[in-house]
Length: 377
Image 1 (cartoon, rainbow, N blue to C red):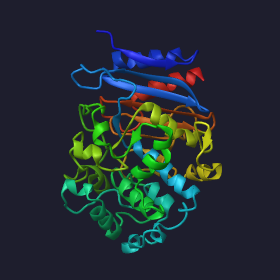
Image 2: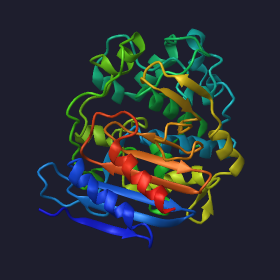
Image 3: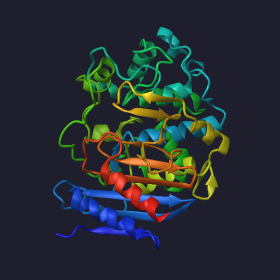
Image 4: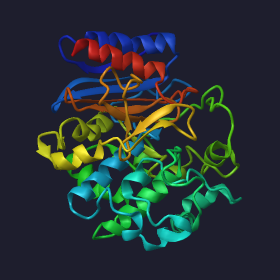
């Protein structure tokens, strides 16, 4: 059976279509999409396969899919918008905007440090119900009171779910109207520009969300330690109910963003173009430059890699996870999705899919597409 593939590629970018088709053959892709944008021009916008695991419903242009931690980069964009509005400052303590956060020795943690996974709150070590993650006020109070799991200044430890709790608490307190990360996306960034990305999916939009198929095995986390256990392996480390209506409709900015590849590529564009989205500057160039400053690098305490973080995005350096440019930034999501931005070439892009694999960063399907795209630039 021939896999249906739709969309467009600019002249000269046919190898990207070939790589996209190859993923369905070599990686048994079910459904996926890939988009590449340069300086506001859409060079590649492909989608194909099926949105359901039984391969009966075709993936369409408006199919949305959960992208898990890829949404952290979108959350970073929302924070950057508030910084540009003068409502936040990267080097200011989180406690300036959220006084309760100063408890248990966290008074000195800055916004940039919180966004770069240095706050020592990678998970909640005390037993709780997985459903507690859906109680915003409860989880904010718990992390505000929690003692960090390592001292500030002793490196990063990836915050898989708590990143979103912290970011949303800060955003709501900084925004004049008290809007959430998802609310600001809807009202300020995505809604006015018809960008199809959602943190908190409406009941109407859930009908077009693709199934996600879990990976064949858990990702390899390396030698176990207390930080990895708290972040990933406790029975309450994640919210659960993934794919259910309650999970899709919740606002978990670190973990349950839903969207199209085109939407994520557009939302990554300001990181590639000094703050421009389509034909409009939405964030100042100086703010974007500040967001992309390397805040910490080296062995991560939670993920089994050497990592470099800006304020909410990962920096490529020499990893090639986001292509050959060391200054490129982006984020991968559980199972393989990613969004990326290259500020040297003015390029942004995204890969999304519904068959998840057991790769934490640098899924071969995404890297095959990114490699092909760079070969055409």
